[in-house]
Image (cartoon, rainbow, N blue to C red):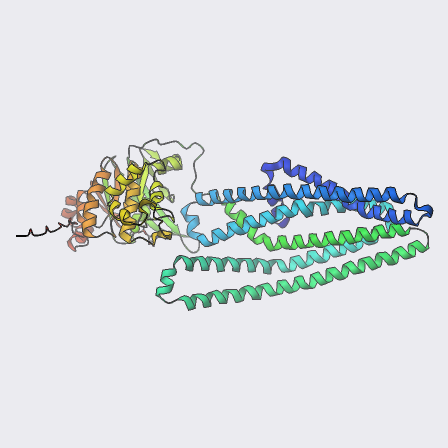
Length: 594
Ligand SMILES: Nc1ncnc2c1ncn2[C@@H]1O[C@H](COP(=O)(O)OP(=O)(O)O)[C@@H](O)[C@H]1O
Ligand SMILES: [Mg+2]
């Protein structure tokens, strides 16, 4: 995207308030006229004062005053409305970025650190904001005043006008060259700033690890090294701009001197009046001021292009997973699930894919329980994430109730699937709000019932603010088991016909797990339930066991069949790879006093 296209896109963001934007443009046109009128009237006043009797002077001074005050009023109006417009559009841009970014698939978020995304959003919108304000308050008027002034100046005196235009053009060319030279270095600087903020937010996010490994000094050293790179990239840019600003000032002095010199010689020949010279000096001063401002704006725009490009890049990322044009609503699914020769791999380092699930086929009857077992890294989590379309398989098809997932609306699909993730995924919000994520309309009674079933109510009640207790970022203020129980309660509240339990009870102690197991059994009744489990009982009661190894389905069947078969599953079971059944602890009764 070249810089002009980029700028047009920035201005294009104002399209939803087109009318106001056009009105502001017209007001700027009026301002440009006034900018030009002032030096012209000033010159005429000088000539009128020099004329015998100075009869015309009072009238011209009155015009001049009128033009001046008119300009003040118009610019106040423009400023106020431009400000308001820019503020509104900035919030709209944040909204758009947020909505789009949050809808992008996991593959995108895997590649973009949250710290970077936040910086891209904040940097992008504040640059948009500055450019909009500049557009209305300055740039437009500058452009228009040049367009108005040049022909009139040519008409007044073409020799002086040509000198002025020539000097201005060389000024503009100078600046353009300087900008081109420094542009690439500035992009590098911006990228380094992104790296710094990504790194910092990553450290903030894992501050516990940093502190326990006493890594602070190393982290700081790494950050300082990045900062040194920023400065060594930034200094040459700043040097270039310092030289340019000195040259600009020299050019403006030169321009005024040249106009005075040519004006004096023309005046001696009687070709121009003193007032004309005054007007031209006024034009030139004004043009130089405007051009300097404009050069500043262009250089600023170059400073910002990288940040704006990053911003638009996110907005332009088309989600790889999106609703088909004729996507259907699944309604409430019966819960028949079919994997038909499904293969999927994550994107590798150099564009190839690393297979995680290979040619997986199975069929799950509505309401049945399917257990996935296999060594860690076998692809169990990945296979089930395909079911709610965190990713799409590279080949094969997945069907729910006979419908290909890709033909179902994403929302409708995901409403039908409750997931207890391996990572509970808690928000920096109250416990209650974390549960309501599953069902915003849930009553307090329903929330409590779900929490009770998930054995979470008791620990929630011991918290200072109960259900209103704030959960720290990523749930750090809760124990692993507490987090899991909240995740289970959340899945219960969702009440979806298909349920995925990804090692949902792995962090729980025996007694708690045994109690939750009952609730989970109750929950899975009437739902198609996928469990990734490590307990023998869960596996034993499953209607279908899928044994995965390195992404492949190596065995499948019921417990007894698989044990009888004497394959990998039997081996795993034999070696005690499954934990024995959890048992509910019996609280020993206190001996009665004799
Ligand atoms: N987001 C990801 N990006 C790249 N590779 C991944 C990602 N998630 C998992 N993998 C890889 O895919 C394979 C299967 O992982 P996973 O499905 O989590 O296994 P399991 O749940 O059976 O332990 C592993 O080799 C893992 O490293
Ligand atoms: Mg897993």
